[in-house]
Image (cartoon, rainbow, N blue to C red; front, side, top):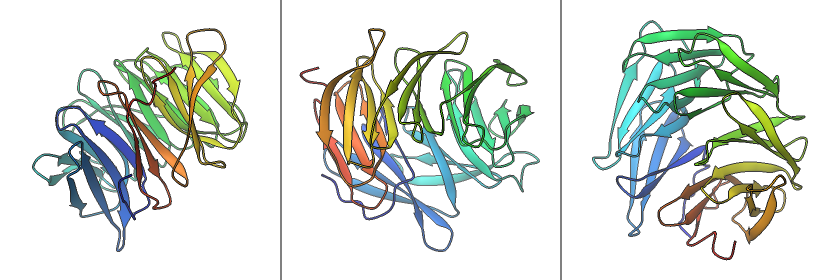
Length: 287
């Protein structure tokens, strides 16, 4: 168990530094990234503004969305640089993801998706959503979660149009991409794990998960889902037509964020209530 008193908003694992990065809000409209190295070292990087979401590049950097742009954070150096997106000083960015080609994609509170063509320049924008609550990518395809419309939408590679849009249960809340090219969605209100295939976007599996499913993480063998009402996490095998529960663990309180480190087989469970970070080595053993 690693202590973290702050309420976690998001977490990613960085392969280059072999560390977990956790984004948390701070007083006075500030934010903080706390990194947890495998050796036990902890480092904090202050962000001079409120941040909303985070993605990484597995090369020692994470990118954190904020009003008007994003922070580029060097995890090894412990530094953060604010990058303003051209012409978007007043835009409330709510989501961020990174494509396989390295281009960043940002979503906004007014329902617009911005695909950047450089660090600062908007190459394409598409405003068809009530709000962009989450973004993930598979290759160069961006998938958008809109909680108000409880929908998932795959964009074309240019970011100028929606290729496919599907309803996501009764109340989708979170989304994750996995190593097998799928997109996982937690339908918290409907009590389901939704599994989407890509190219085209299609619902492949819908499986009941009780106790308020929320946190998600994908791996090459299992899909991980947290149950926030019972403080549990479950690993499901998706290789057959119906998800099959393989492992289950009790977790920290309010397990909102899950991160899986594929090379080490370590599952990180991050509390959304300040109860810390639970580290589960060899989480898939026995599956």
